Length: 92
Image (cartoon, rainbow, N blue to C red; front, side, top):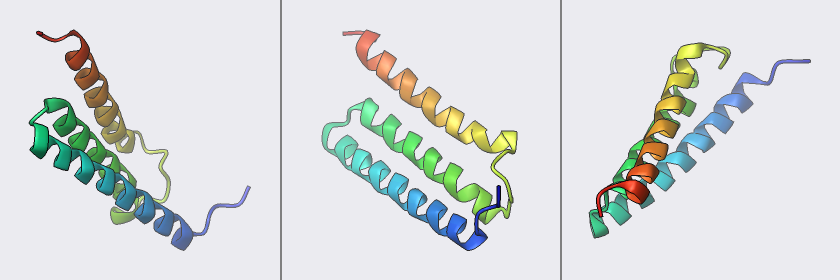
């Protein structure tokens, strides 16, 4: 199996980063309108996912197989799970 073209991989990572940041900005807009903590948590989680996509390119890491890169993704998903659980099972 051949390795992907680094330019194409950087372009795809940039596109995904932009997508994650755009979604995060939408959630931030909803949070400003409603002040619901769920939206703020989702905005932060999508910012972490954007950073997860951009980090290998910005830090010139040739492979995503580095364990510490996935910690950003893990933190984002833990935030999302915690926010949903808090919204559903928190104080009413």
